[in-house]
Image 1 (cartoon, rainbow, N blue to C red):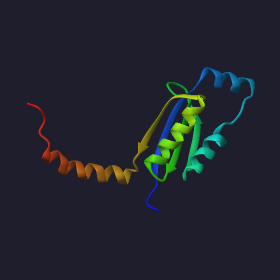
Image 2 (tube, rainbow, N blue to C red):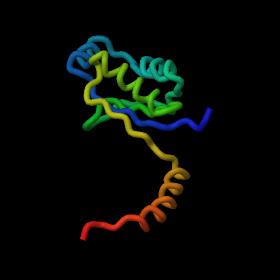
Image 3 (tube, rainbow, N blue to C red):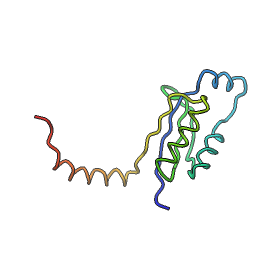
Image 4 (cartoon, rainbow, N blue to C red):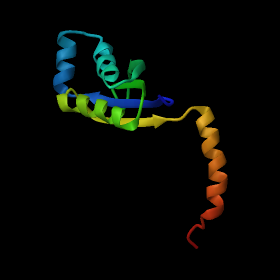
Length: 112
């Protein structure tokens, strides 16, 4: 198997999910871990957050489709709304991208 891709999943709990969590305070990271592992991934960590998102999860996944499946499975429950997945690059991958950008920039002419 090739290198795993790293993703950040962010989302907000629905009003109904928040009501349930208040009535029965629960660490939901196990549920996130289960769906990630069911799709061949590894959960790096999960956090509650202030601001735009209530939940942030970092996961290593074998491919984009596996992460999409995780996001769809979670969204289908209705417990998380406004979910978004962001693929993350290691610093080594970022430097590779910067190096490639040097060549790509030579082929691009901005509008004038």
